[in-house]
Image (cartoon, rainbow, N blue to C red; front, side, top):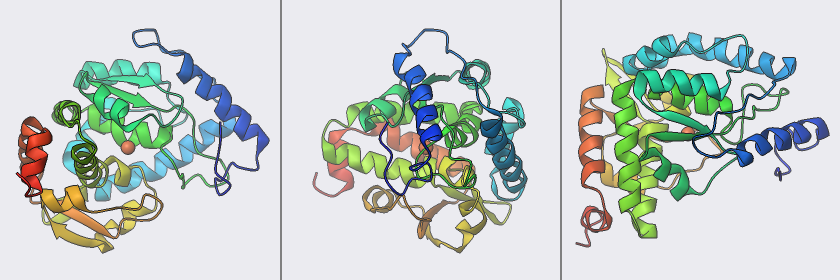
Length: 274
Ligand SMILES: [Fe+2]
C-alpha cells in the first residue's frame, strides 16, 4: 500500500501495516461472498465515534431532508466503526443497494459501472487518528456516512443506479469525463434550496467535517448541466464553486432524465458538437 508523503499516516508504520491488512480483506473479496468482518482497534473506533458525533450534529443544520431520512432509517452505530456486512444488509433492506468491499481506490469505470448493478464499492480503512477530521482520500467515514446514508433512501438509490447505467453507455473518455464531473458536482458536492436555505445532498460535503460548515460561502451557481460536466475541480481543497438545484425534486428529475438519456451521442450534443 503506497501512501503519498503528505498523507497523515505516511510516517506511522503501524497505520501502514493496518491499512495493508484491511486492504487484503477487500482484495480477497469476491462478489456474492459473505463480507468478512474487520476487527477495528479501540483507536479506530474512537476516530469513528468522534467524527460521527460531530457530523450528525452538523447534518441537522446543513443536510437536506432526504439525506436525513436515509440516515434516520439506517441508524449507523455511533460508538464503533460499522462492519460493511451489517451496513450492506441494512442498505439492501432499505434501498435495495449492496455495499461491497474493495482494497482502495478502484478504476473510475469499475466504480461507476458497479452502480448499474446497484452495488457500491467501499473502502474499509479509516483515516489516521492524528487528524480525525481530515482525509486526503475516500475512507470508510466518507463511504458510509456520506454514501450509505444516501443509499438507504430509495430515491437516491435509484439515482445512483441510473448514474451507473449512464456511465456504461459513456464509452469514450470524453463522455466519461463529462459524466464524472457531473457526478462530482451533484452526488458528491451538490447543494439545493430547501425551506429558504441552502442544504447539502452530496456525499463529499456530508462527510466533510470542515467543508460542511463553510459550503455556503462558496460561489453558488445555478443548476447547469453543461457547466457542471465541463468544470475542472481540485479534490485537495474546499470546493470554491458549487451548483445549487432549485429543490430536491427538481434535482432528482433533472439528473434522472439526464442519466437515462446519456451516451456518447448525448455527450456530443451537450457539448455542442452533435
Ligand atoms: Fe464519494
